[in-house]
Length: 582
DNA sequence: GAGTTTACCC
Image 1 (cartoon, chains in turn cyan, purple):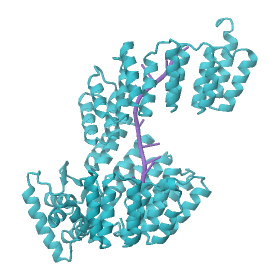
Image 2 (tube, rainbow, N blue to C red):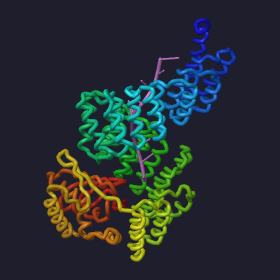
Image 3 (cartoon, rainbow, N blue to C red):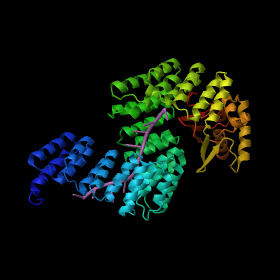
Image 4 (cartoon, protein in one colour):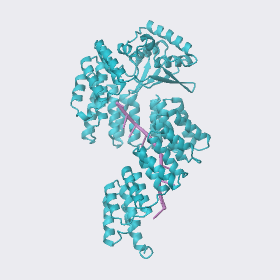
């Protein structure tokens, strides 16, 4: 049959292939197959199925599949592969079940795709079930399946199990290495990601573009500019072609490591940029508070014909908020809806509230919040509103908002600290005490703050009152002396009353030895004059440290850059780039 | 006949 009709089938096949990923044309091609009587050809149906998946229509794929009378292994594998590749993970699992039900033995090709689908939906139980099928089928030592399992465990938040699978691989392909590195990075284990990257190079495996993308992400998390520069040199030296993924990762890394100028350098040297690259560059300027530059890149992007997406608007609005560009922000928000048809998401709302709040338009911010639908009142919206209340010392609204915040997310200890701060600022110390009791009753503890700083190509970590560093005594003495100089210059500690009540710790001690101050003191001790300090803090910088570091930048004539949880602070000659709005 | 990894966001 195949031989006899080969000629005609080949022509039909060509017609299907020509239809490509165009759903309408695929449907026409299918109709034509029905007319010519070829609609029972499994080869043709297989091709049609994969293409309709690629065209994004899982509904049509399902309909086609139902019309196949006796699907064979190849058809099933193609279906599983295509649905998994194009993100229809639940369908992949459904097709896999149908396959087993039809008594067709899965192959390594089946398993890689099904495991990827389980990874994409982080379904741990299902993935482990599939893994048991892998054991039974005897494909445990297949390197593709193993690499897929590494990704699967990493994506289901089990990086240690991923590592176990990885360690047990007799031979590791570059994809396996990449999966392990990205797995660590995606779980926030940046140091482990860099470690595996180094092991990979020691093993003589040449990193490729995907490797660098993941390790650059890890580096961004760490905020280590030194590591980032070294990686950049590695990339240039390796002769890897600079693709848009790599360029975006580099722009992001340089921005998040505090050198937005270098980010711009990479950006300018990249010829073909898509919306993601442009968005990364705008985001870089935004997080450093360079709103004018962010808007200029945004303008150029549109002039180039690159269409902004929802994320682009988040970063543009955020840049406006952090630079006090309220009128510009309003225009952007209006255009986003009207010209670009982007439906505002909660992230956009957060930016708008933040923008009004920082700009001093507290009532407008609150009006905006009240105009949101109940399901849009996520904790982030309340947090933004609360920040505005604190900044503008409106404690009545502040207390109200903080109570909403706790109702929205009762298990987050940070919210109680904010509420407690509000009560303290409003002078309601009885309430401060009761919040503290609630926290104790619910077993909630304040997140531990820590700061890191790179000195001589090594990263040092400090936490509040930390004495684990061998030079602790020297650092504390240096810091004490430094703070005296600051006091002479006019620095007065900003006491956070609520913290005092909450922590039951000796107030001045806690304040003076905050992690960011320790990191700055250490950096000043260990580096020469003129060297810019770069400190990374896991939480938001505290008000007292912010004030102290401004004075430190004066009395030591140093530039100090601090990245906190939400943005960068550039301290220079007694002022900060955030203009005290953060 | 075919598969596993990679970028922008409060």
